[in-house]
Amino acid sequence: MDERNRQKRPGIPTIYNGVRFRSRLEARYAVFFDKIGWPWNYEATDLDGYIPDFLIDFEPGILLFEVKGMDEELDAAEFKIEMSGWRQEAVVASGQIEHSNVGRFLERSQNEFLWDGAELFFCLSCGKVSVRPAGGNWRCRVCGIGSRGGNEHVGEFDPREAWSEAGNRVQWRAA
Ligand SMILES: [Zn+2]
Image 1 (cartoon, rainbow, N blue to C red):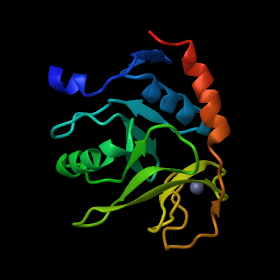
Image 2: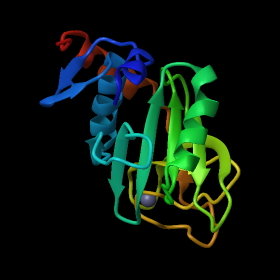
Image 3: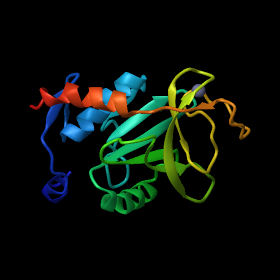
């Protein structure tokens, strides 16, 4: 990443679990992922034009997870992902987590990019926190159930407690 791009990403470098994150917000997401049992990797791959923040290694398919500080950055992030050659699903999260909608979800399809709201939910089948596009296929991205479009597995998840705990964890971990 060149100096110009670096300057676009303000933040306090923060170490969590031996990984140095560019910002406290990114570190907080890593703690949050640990709390909900998501197997994350930070800046693990180099796509065409950019390095995604996180890849979440779900069994049915890897989810790209990009963290943005402000809503205004979401469009640019979506464009970057579309141009990057990534052909699996993606989430672009917007700042702090305040409710189950955490940003935008890119649903995988043959030739188009389908962006929708990204909803966290509790999967009643695998018992894990999962994520889905608000108006798209509600299949559990963690265990794969519901691939025919059913919603019997979809329960509610309020992320505020885990997010709050994640915040406490990174407060004293600034590098
Ligand atoms: Zn599931």
